[in-house]
Image (cartoon, rainbow, N blue to C red; front, top):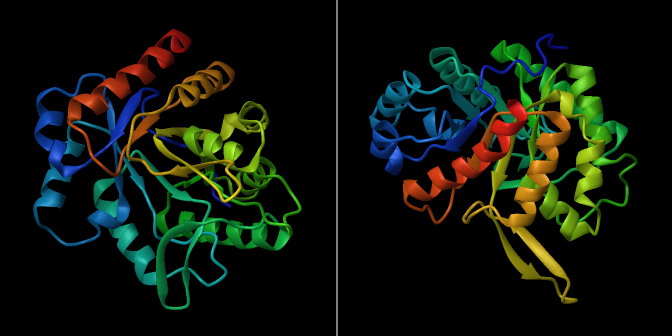
Length: 284
């Protein structure tokens, strides 16, 4: 068990996911953007322009490292080579925060390039806690674990998602990353209430919040189906859910997550300003 749960050095202000095409704009006019997040797997190489730009940005912005490839929820042992590369990145960058997903993405030697959901059972809980402990010990830093976006529910689950996450945080000392868009996507797809989810969430363990866009579709019965796509603006119902979250739990570092169909930096800056407008009155 790690003893520095939710230890984040990110300011409780707005950040954006960093993409190299925005490097010049960030240096020139960041506006309300006070911190940046990177995907760990994009920076595990040796040298080159990506690492040079990241070193330069780290002198001006706190950096959050967000992993997408550890497969924390997988039944197989974690990849020791992946952990070693991740440790090398965190050792030289010394990020303000590190996070990963409550998901699995590997089977045998295959990497599935997706973040797949888990059944919430005692066996799964024990596996996830062991993997979180392993990562926190190897990195010598706390991990924030992110709630997933869901498109179906497992019949064998014996506990609610918020209870599962609370148990992981309690047993391992890790913190939590609350993705508000994921809450809205899952609630729409599964027919549950997103406000009730937030009200039940252990907000005191939250070290970071994510906001992003989603795509709208329908399933074979014509019911709404939302896809967590990270390729558009945050929609108004998610902004309302975020405002409820901040009012309930207080200001938290908040990321605008945009990974596909990248816009001009001015669009990200405007989204960050909208988050700042919700954070600032509560902080004051």
